[in-house]
Image 1 (cartoon, one colour):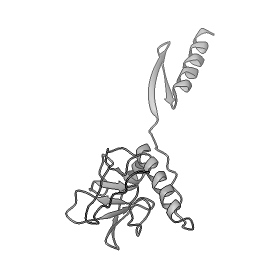
Image 2 (tube, helix red, strand yellow):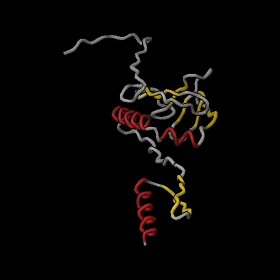
Image 3 (cartoon, one colour):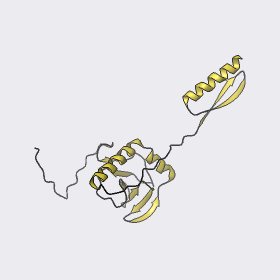
Image 4 (cartoon, helix red, strand yellow):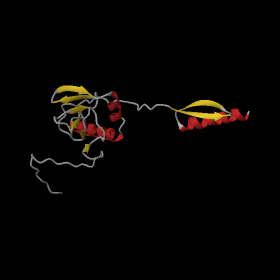
Length: 161
């Protein structure tokens, strides 16, 4: 068996790589004009599991990622924008850390209930491209590459007939 080491309670141990799978994740973008740090094993579960702690603000804030509310202590001070909320929940690194944090919390507290993970779609604008066939301009809306190929094949077959 391995040796047991006693770590003083005033000592903070960080294993940080900037990527999930470790204990911390810092999204490389701001929300509510603040940079955030999400902990996988944060014992402070008052706001939510996981939750973000501000790392560049003068005062300490916490972010509840499930509803986008920002807190100072137990007082709500604001909300992140819808765009920031979507960006956070479509961040694959954050999703991985959130799922791992929830699993760790539920192992420690098997009777606890956690809110459902929001399902958000990353809305992208449809691209438009002008295609010239026999000096006639046809506007084709591109959603996927395969749709574009089908549209081109249809346009070419119409040209030949």
